[in-house]
Image (spheres, rainbow, N blue to C red):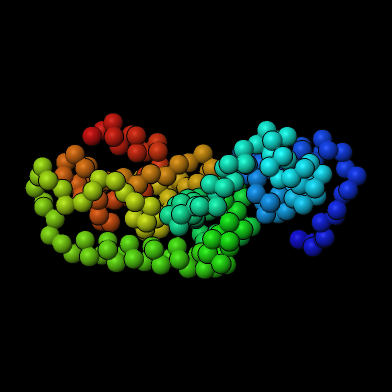
Length: 225
């Protein structure tokens, strides 16, 4: 990609500045835009827009955007960022790069990860650390003697957290175990993580009892049970 300096447009009509701010929000699928996001994704820099429109808050008001969401976005948790990264990784079937972190594939840009973790690589390292911790827990669970006969009491929770979900999909190569389809080759495909032995039949939420199914195959399996 050719590197170019962002031009300062002092005489651009105000309507164009407002339209560009709106377009940036639309591009990011948000109802707010941070200064960093405007500088990264917009045609006009945030300082120019703020100067011409009477401040960043006033610019949001004129563009019918909600500045309050901007403040909320600064308080994103590690888990929120990791879950988004897990979704992007699953759809791509490989480790994302910074250029992948754009809507609609990603809710947050690479810049958000840089500001939160210090660098993009540190964010990836923390993500992998969380996955490895979950894998250790999953390995310990698999060595326990789980009941073979139906029981009214479960040793695990029914809900599958994002870490275990990622491990299951990674083990299944991010493809449906039944039909082999994946979001990487067909964007309409939605992957689920399913209990092989149903939870209602005392199936536990452990790695060896979980599989990746697309939404269609998962619904078909449910109809047969």
